[in-house]
Length: 372
Image (cartoon, rainbow, N blue to C red; front, side, top):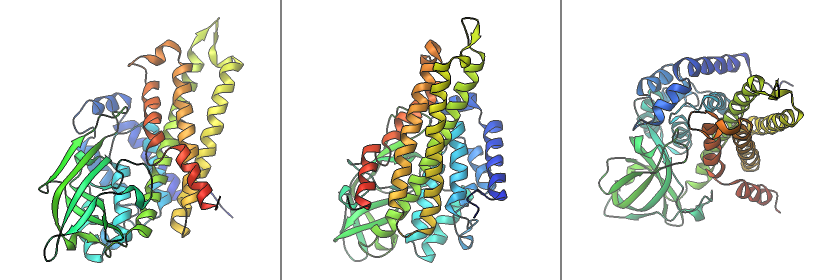
């Protein structure tokens, strides 16, 4: 049995890496970090032309209709280069629309998303990082015939300030519903948040009695959670892939530095104390990569992939955190300067560690899935 990627997927990997190296080297990453949007609109259009935004979008909705493993391939290479873009936000939102939306809603939302003309993001988390209906306090209340009002606050909405539409998760009746809402809707306020990693963007979204039509609901009243949880797990796997790529990028950067940095008349990479630390980063990264690849298969082929996804997130968070911290340490004093790129990987690890659930929370998910 072949557990490897197909030749087409490896070609996709090479294409993404070449694109990132040529279009977004680290100097360009730093320029985008200081910009208002933090991503290059022309580069985003090129990513859409290459089909990356529609990899897992059904063909009838304008996408390529591929598997989540293909999304993971792209996410990993984008993470390696720290390329700033709302790729993860858009692909996760696309997954939610595909699972929950009607054919008409898919046609309306997914085609412009795959074409790169519309940025859509999923707004789920609030004060808690719990991936569970109990973490949602935002409410949807009936307001006349065919209308509802949404009230509440969403936190850390990925690329919320760049989104044209928001998929807002709200409590309706005894369950959860998802509503597709224009970002310019009356009563909806988007406030950019200051993150430790400025290659990423997130926002606080406040809903003050935002009126929406019932037709904007994706799926049945209060019945979104079973399918929404699968979309969230798919997005979490893509985040894991990005983290694995970033850990690998940090390891490569530090290894190259260890080959040229001289101490006591010899490259520091020859010292066992340095070799061992680099080897430990490599082992942690490869372990996280294996778990992430399996989880990417599981979200497409298993009814319940939560345990596999949680294990992947726990390992990926620890691997990137370690790679980032050790990368700064092994660079020595220069690693603590703004000019050194090692600090960018460290900050990505600090941010991603707690996104969509900390390692401790993911371990609790694994135990709960096993009935412990």
